[in-house]
Image 1 (cartoon, helix red, strand yellow):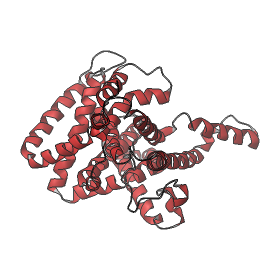
Image 2 (cartoon, rainbow, N blue to C red):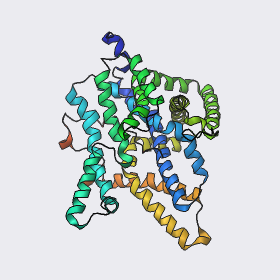
Image 3 (tube, rainbow, N blue to C red):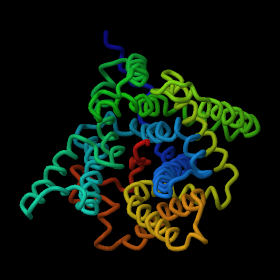
Image 4 (tube, rainbow, N blue to C red):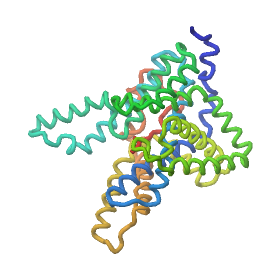
Length: 383
């Protein structure tokens, strides 16, 4: 039985425009994109240097909430466009993501062309192999760009279902999909099942999440105590082994994983809210990263790989001055975050501006008068 539109759509009605400008959203995005870049940088550097450092523990601690929070934040503003006509909706939530996905699939693939066409003989075969790779990327999300791909899918699915399925039913179904073992499914379906509940939660409970952030700033002492308790419990679940191969720690167990992802995402909201209340240079830096999270997300892979390669060669050439894994991981992370920001600033307003800003030619509806707040707080795949 169809629910009345006023009930079924109330949780996802458009938010006030001023909500899009709340600083804590960008602070939360900034923290999350740094954690994601840290994950890739740390795991890759540890593998290259054959060891682990202190950042490996930070990466593992953040595993339960790192990606869930990105999707929750990305769902917050879907309500602003979900009831618009399909042309405008597609422009904001499909074409937007498709443009950056397609562009950066090509860019990343060009840098990895040697590995992509390995085994092919002759220019024609190599060109065919590269073309087949690009065609496959249309149906199988490529490399770190899977997040942008999935955001478009999530947006379309939510618009299709939000007036046809009561929100409670939709949320329960998404939670069940997250809990069920789906690792044997095709990659896109597996990722959809594992992540959709967080995006949907951000969409359905956007107003409540903004009220929660306001409440945190009003009760800072209580919020700090809650965050301290959460951090202790998070560490217990993350670092307690189970002896089960499929779920090596308590945090990886079904249901527990969903609970930790949800609570952890809200913890990041609370932390970001407190940071905006405190202010200071750290908050400003996190907010700057959050405002340009798509820049970092799209551009971090190359400086990360280059910096890691330089450090590995330095350690081989000067073993007496070799950097340990922890310090090396920190340097790689910093380069992977800062270089894209610097490059974007350098090309802003030039012919290369299309790398990070969708040109008017790639809009199917009039571009918004002010920069859209629908860009993803992007994140690479979990290791």
